[in-house]
Image (cartoon, rainbow over all chains, first blue to last red; front, side):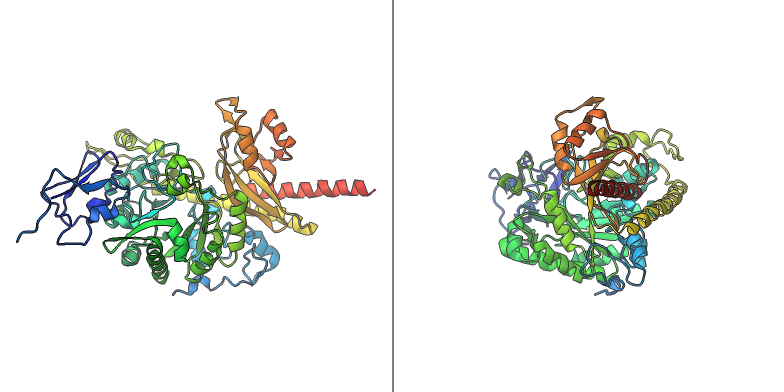
Length: 74
Length: 515
């Protein structure tokens, strides 16, 4: 269940980290990444994934297909 | 809305808009200090406002000869996407908003302020201008301001914002005693806005087009009103985009003036495909100096227009067009803390900041007051001579200056010229034009001349401390007089003296021709 950040495009502006309701975004050595176990794709919080909403560079945050999609606990 | 800001700005001089005299004083006295836009003593501003801005190099054209500012780049996130911005492009030779070489944490920013203040007692203002939007990083921004406030109590604090998130932070801004806020307002018409803004992030959604522009404009104007009501001084920045909002900015000017902004800074669009901005890639051009000046002239009136904006980087440090950022990189600051500086350095065995030297700062300000008094006297002397002559011509002059309000720079070393308009009413700063240096390490750069001639278009003369024989001849061939006679004298007094001399020469020539 996760979005991921393309670090070759990311400008490290931290806007996504500020907006994430799950505190799932961390910065290490100037690189930002999303912790898949914490990301709920904003389901349960907002209509749209907030990191994508605020990211200034197109096509930089997108679904990580290597992770299962988020499903809220029943 | 706070009406006090407009109490003594009566449009007594309509339709002679260029001068902003205080109605109750005599014409000559008013002209002597009101002649130059946002310059000199009380140029049409109420005393209370003037006291707050007279030492701010961005808000006062006079102060920008004496005081330095720095921007601390603690605000990387942004909540909108303007078509003139590309945050990915950072080159250290680039000097424009949105560009920084290093982002800072609030703690390090405060340390940097102390390091700079230790070396530069002229430092009067610290601002948070980006590289994104100050209020899209509210936590970092306010934390930084708090720390600086605590450690540098006499420093003026400033911040810059697009206004989208402004309303919810007005109380905190007021509480921290932030002296001035700049809001960038490029339009009040959503159809025009749709051409300037690609998207905004608001209430957890992304908006585009007309609707985005409408929301942004509403929020900007509401934020402006709230700030003014809270007694915060507000400058409005507008980017002039020819063919998009050029005519419209006259309406924007009226709208922000009406809501209590005290200064309007109309800046040229910076647009180059190499920057990868939307406008750059579209080939949208910026305005010519003449277009810019003409719009600024039209907007001038009851409201001050800023003419000397450097459009500097969000991590700029210094005075005028110098950027001393490279002296204060984080590497250098960490090492300086360990060595002895002029002021006392506390060594706790780990990195510590230099002590804040209030004495040096006070001494500098005392010196500035002396200089200002001296300069005003010199200027007033020249002006009375011209007023007596009943002339009407206006001329544009280019000036090479390193600071201190004097003509103290060599032609070859100038990276920009300050442009003054001189007339019987006085000398007024109307802008500055950047150029490539003519002198490259002791050798002339032939290729620099055409762009310098371009920048000097419309100018009758260029006043410098010194100029070489060859460039002087080239200038003269282009009809521009190169003048070294006023080396190290005050700029405005010299401009007026030159004007007087030119008048005499022309009249002498006319008299001969008539005989």
